[in-house]
Length: 137
Image (tube, rainbow, N blue to C red):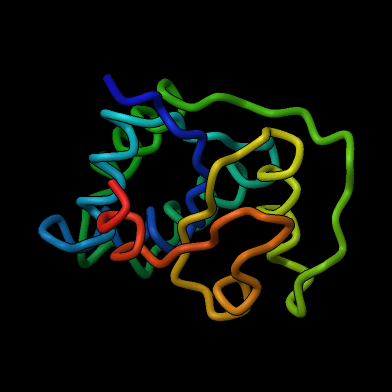
């Protein structure tokens, strides 16, 4: 029996997963929610909710489907309080994902963001692309 890993999944992976239901990011989200523990902070969940509510996604997926997707993620998520702040990424907007990883004792970050991917490994933490995560599963 494999022990569940603690994962930080970047907003870009969730957004791609809802838009492209047969994509690698969707496989990542499905596998992560079924086999691992997705961890969030209030900031990362707020960003996800804001991104999924954008009207630019209306032509791909209905608002109702996006709201259901978000509710499923929220119900499976573990929320982590942020005690230690991080200022390490060249894009300061991505520091919130590092904060969740550090404060939540994550095993890895899954992202399509080059600013985060170039930091692999960060403090011994794997930062993987969606395909890299699936290959490690």
